[in-house]
Image 1 (cartoon, helix red, strand yellow):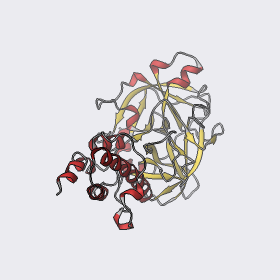
Image 2 (cartoon, rainbow, N blue to C red):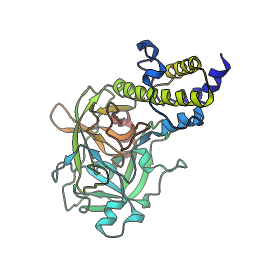
Image 3 (cartoon, rainbow, N blue to C red):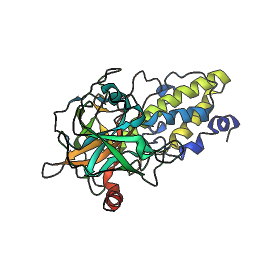
Image 4 (tube, rainbow, N blue to C red):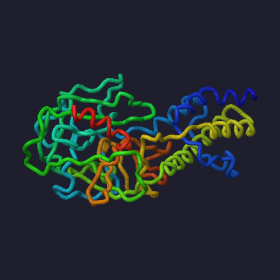
Length: 355
C-alpha cells in the first residue's frame, strides 16, 4: 500500500472493527467522490485516530443534566403511571429546585419493587455501579415537584454492558420497599418478550427541555416511529462520511497530501466502518428529527400498543448521534435515536425480579 495512504489510515482501522459507524450506502458504489460529500473541518493537524475517537464521542449515551423530549407535549396526570424519575440524592435539598436539578435519568416501574432503566445511567467511569444510596426514585406524578421519593436498595447493571458500543444498555433498581401507597397514580408496565418488533407507531416519554435552556417541570410525550435498524445505520453512515471527508481534505491541504491518496484512504475507511447498531438495539424517530428523545431522557421507555390495545415497553432510551458542527443537542435530520431492545432481555429481567 502507498506509504502516504497508510499514514492517513494509521489508528483508524482498529477503531473501525469496533462498530462505531456504518458502511451501508458505500461512497464509490454511488459514484461520489471525497469532495462531493465533504463538509468543512477544523484544523488539519489533528491525527486521524483523534478524529475517529471524537466522532465516536458524538454517538453518546443520553444521560445528563440537559434533558429534553424534543417536539413533545405535556402528559396528562395518570397517563403513564409507570414512569419514574431518577435523582442524585446529594443534590436533593428539600426544595423544588433541588428536585429539578437532581434529576438525571428516567425509568419505569415493571413491578412493585423494581425499576427498569439504562445501564449508562448507573454505571461509573470505572465500570462499577453507583451506590444505591446515591440514587432516589420519584414516583406518582408527571410533575417533578410532586410524588414520592423512594430509596434504592440495589443497583444491577447488565454484566455485559459495553460503555464504548453502548450495548446491553439495561439496568434494574430494586427499591428498598415495595410501592404500596402513593399520593398519585402508580402502576407497572409489561415488558415486551422476544426480539421481533415490526416497524410502526410508538411513544417515548421523559422530562426535559422543549427548546434550549427551557425546562418544563411536567413529563413530556411524543409520537415517533419504530423503523428498521438499517435506517439508523444509513443516516449515521452518511453523516460520518461527510465529516470524515471534510477532515481528510483539511488534513491533505495542511500536509500537501495528493488528492488521489486522500480518495483512496477515504474509500478504504468508508468500506470498513462497521454497523453502529447491534441486534440489541432499536432505531426510532422521524426523518426530520423534530420529534425524538435527547440528553437526560435516558432510561425512559419506548412504548407500543399490543394487539389488545395496551401499552408495552419495547425499548429504553439509550443513545444518539450528533453532527460534528451541531449547534444544538439532538433533533437532527436523518439521525434517529437508539433504544435498548427490551425483548432481548426478558429472561435476564425475570431472573432478577423473580429472585
